[in-house]
Amino acid sequence: MEAHDIDGQLTEMLLSEEDIHAKLAELARVIEIDYADKNVLLVGVLKGAVMVMADLVRELRIHANMDWMAVSSYGSGTQSSGVVRILKDLDTDVTGRHVLIVEDIIDSGLTLSWLQSNLVTRGAASVEICALLRKPDAAKVAVDVKYLGFDIPNQFVVGYGLDYAEKYRNLRGVGILAPHVYS
Ligand code: XMP
Ligand code: MG
Image (cartoon, rainbow, N blue to C red):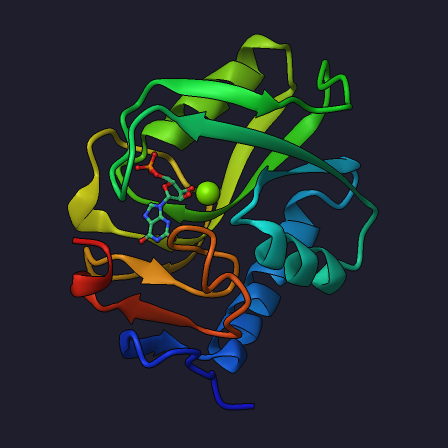
């Protein structure tokens, strides 16, 4: 199905639902080998990663547990501040677990680098990252992302879980939001 717009505020569609599903299937083939005997714990970051998690986990032909965290970077608008606050913590004790963080997007990298070290500190056996999108030109800290979907331009994108002011998460694909909407 063609990725749909909602209100004509997308300047460009970057990825269709088919593009995303094909890439997640590709990543799943690698993940299921890497975690064949590890009972992986997928940790999704709410709310943006909901769609990535739902599609990725159904591609995996191995046992995979799921849990969720909600974090917020202090700051407003479209900029991450690097000061991270846990809004909802895991239900699972990660001690000794092989954790794979599932994220929608790496922008500055501040959120994920904080989260990765937070989970390492709790005693996880391993903490790797799977992210659908990355903006290489926005990086402030290096994030070692083991399973990456797509590198995208440094523009604000929405859809497939990604929002602006809680809107557009339900778009099937990912598109660039017209800058006049948020500036
Ligand atoms: P950092 O900068 O910490 O940011 O890597 C990660 C979080 O910021 C949000 N984010 C976006 N959300 N379109 C969005 O809808 C974007 O282009 C975008 N860039 C960053 C997102 O919540 C991500 O987890
Ligand atoms: Mg997010």
